Image (cartoon, rainbow over all chains, first blue to last red; front, top):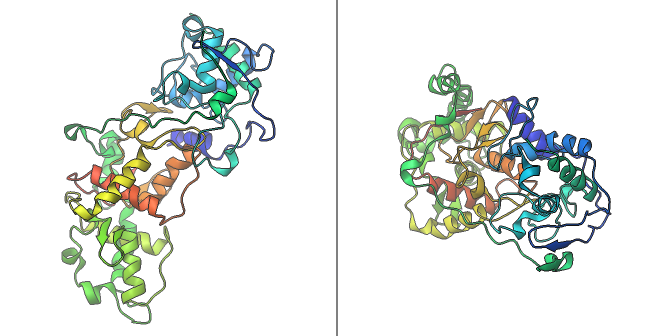
Length: 149
Length: 256
């Protein structure tokens, strides 16, 4: 039951950590299966990235993914384990998979974390906002890149 | 080298996700996913909190109301006989309206047309109690969805079930057809067969309808929920009931 509440809290009512509606999305370039350049022209902070990944109201990652986070009890199995993600993918590949994984697989279950077009019936508090800001995406990319066994 | 810009992406439209329906021999009620304790709570009438609503519904069934000062029992008699199987075949096609109505909708049609009483609000205590009492009379009976006139509404429900929605851009089918049994935040994803509505959710600490449950999922997807009673909900209800055709009714079920 506790876990159910976590899902509700995480997916439903949380409004903190939302990207600003005013800020337009930064342009980016897809090369092959990657976005090679940082969305912010700066390196992300892996510490902040870790906090986003493990925060169910912000990153939402562990609802579907599992990973080496012993303190996080209720993890998901709908998506690949995040363990060793940095050894399996380059930063550019991780960046595109977060920004808009549907460019690689139209049927993907992975939500687009940095796309606001082509979405349907978005609830008002989330309209015209990406799931994460460009800075948050870079923080998560920087953190995932450190995940090597 | 493939180069696309963000602007090019702006015109890209998400294709509907491919989902396969669950083979009939693999269908299961979410009862199968529950702990022995929660199963026992559902199985024993004395421990099933949904029975409180059933008892309240039984009292309402016999109570005269509205300008007509008529009770449900005045027309329908003994519910244990007359209401047998009724919940199992709702949403049912309504001749006059040329569309399906769900059990709550049917109760309100009786209230407004026969009892001359105001319609009860969706999710209000009275309508949940009456629908629980009526659905209890279908316990153990197979869900029925064979009326051909339901077909276009089943198809509308299917298209809603497989359409991406919300900021998280998910479909119902991606979880409930493609990933049932996998864990979402540590909890097994159910197959979404509505065998037990209205049901008592420990999370809600209350009895609730299938529409309330559908609404919960939409909020989770960060999608705009429909107004209770909306045709989209009725179509979704009609589709998931068809999807569960033949499975036994459990109302009032208990779920975590």
